[in-house]
Image (cartoon, rainbow, N blue to C red; front, side):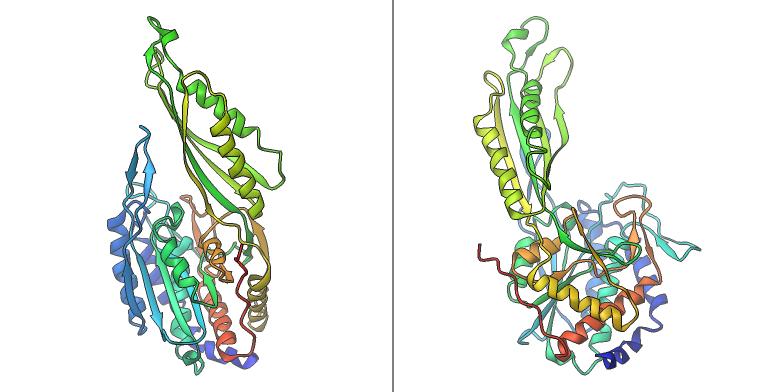
Length: 411
């Protein structure tokens, strides 16, 4: 396998071009809700990937709705899904996944990209994950120059709504993942290069609590206070915390009321759950639904539930563990110490695993402070991580290591 390292030479001088490309991409605001910005970025990215000889297909987003503060479901505008492919008839297929969107809306003050003297690139999406897409691009470019490229097919999936849960893109992603053998997702690694291993599963829940409005002075007793009903709901749900290890239920947002002299007739409650096993999520989901169905929230108080589990648990087991071991071996060959740690965060790696695809989901640049105005990536990690990804691909394509087992998702 050591001889495979010789095919990494095209990356030796790639840092300036990778820095320039990521700076350009990160300078385009592509917050999930800023569809025009996503489309502007996508045009550049499509040109870069098709220049490698990849076929391109644009998939429209699936319909997504969100509950507004009036308790009405509204359509949410989303960008599309871009699928690039090489050698569609290959017997073995590798899926590489990234996302075009960031968490920063069009009017967010964090818009500037800055190269700093400490060797970092500071800007929106530099780490999460425009730098990661750049790593992916260069890894494919380098891999395609090797004599092993013809042995495998490659699919690239770039979606536009990962930061809000991939609701508009997960069906397309899962369909492609079901026909593949292994996957890499180019989310950022930690600053020291540590990868995310096992990932918690997650669910989003929205509750509409309805009561009856009344004047707080003239006819208080005719009213049915939706905020009080919501408080009873929240107390019951929060009481589930601590009942099961590694399972958390977080009430995150409450909207209700119009004035202090009006009995409120509507309250919206939004929450998130996390669990480290599928049983954890099932347990939490069941108890939440039981509370909504059987809870006593006050006379004439009604509760509607929207949402549920949306990111399945990703376990460090089976083919996923085998693929991590392959990446660790690749790191050893190029003097990169690869370690991983479990995390409560979620990403598209969760969805790929749920489709049975073993995957390593932090193959992107090293960086930190993602989702904040202090986000940065380490410039020297451009080539470092591209070398790791390319060598991992070469090891699979050359047959020097076995492909990981697909995951058992029969349950």
